[in-house]
Amino acid sequence: MATQPTKVAIIGAGTIGLSFVALHLMKNPNCTVTIYDIRPDLKEYMESKLPELLVDADVKECISRVSVADSLAKAVGEANIVQEQGREFARFKQSAWTQIEQHAPEDALFWSSTSGIPASEQSKYMKDQTRLVVVHPYNPPHIMPLLEVVPSPSTSQEVIDRTLEYWRSLGRVPVLIRKECTGFVANRLAFALFREACSLVAQGVVGVEDLDSVVQASMGPRWTVAGPFKSYHAGGGEGGLESFMDKIGGTVQACWNASDEDVKAAGLVVGGKWEKDVCRQTDEAYGVVDTAERDLKTKAVLEAVSR
Ligand SMILES: NC(=O)c1ccc[n+]([C@@H]2O[C@H](COP(=O)([O-])OP(=O)(O)OC[C@H]3O[C@@H](n4cnc5c(N)ncnc54)[C@H](O)[C@@H]3O)[C@@H](O)[C@H]2O)c1
Image (tube, rainbow, N blue to C red; front, side, top):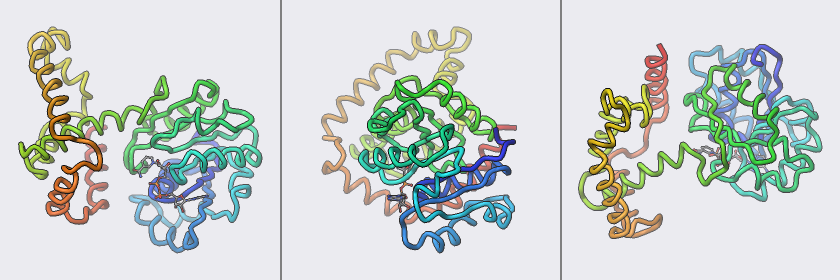
């Protein structure tokens, strides 16, 4: 699909939208991108931010394929792909899709980058609910290969297939999520670990920087080559995961129990007393994080493991 001319309409070009603009431009030389965003400084914002994201690319050539539309209707009028990453409000997304389906070509793909509003809710007022699918990125999508493709029960198989095909043709890693669920899969996993991290720091077991060192020096690099199942399957030796559970299952259960008890005992809810102190410790440790450096290093790791 990347070999065919593709017209992409990007609706909402904030953190995620602009990163997707960069991704399409860098990975699909046959695409043009039209942006629609209500921010008054859109042109200046794009001129200053987009070149920073076009790493190792011909910046001038990429930017020559971008244009800005002054209405939603104009942005999507000739699009093959409409990708939405505006505000995270159901009403906004529902209203956008009813307008988009009026103005976009009949066979255009409709993707939402939402972190949590399922396609079934966003498509509620659409005439044709088969057209919409969530394509949830891991921030920032021009660096991170994962795209969670989350259809609603109404999304057509054709839309799912064309979506997977497009992203595979760009060398990304689209993963089809079989059922709509809160947070999809990547955030469920990441936030489970994050809850445990907050709990351990709040209890004074470990400091913020040391906790980060534990992750960066162990499961972080491991998980770039093998996910948790493959890792523990290997960890069980010849007997695989079953053997691992036989040998370590008692500790696994003890950790799960302790985790539930600690979270309750520490009153670990978002906005709870613990939060201020954990945020202060993190701020003292890191101040403002250099995301450009983070992204360059992540890119180098991904290139190394794909060799
Ligand atoms: N930031 C993340 O880590 C992340 C990760 C995955 C998915 N997402 C999802 O991506 C979406 C956008 O998140 P973000 O972090 O990029 O937000 P953001 O605030 O950086 O960007 C939102 C953009 O939408 C624009 N906008 C607002 N109203 C609009 C309208 N009526 N028409 C067109 N554009 C409009 C804003 O001007 C802004 O540029 C959300 O749905 C969010 O859940 C975010």
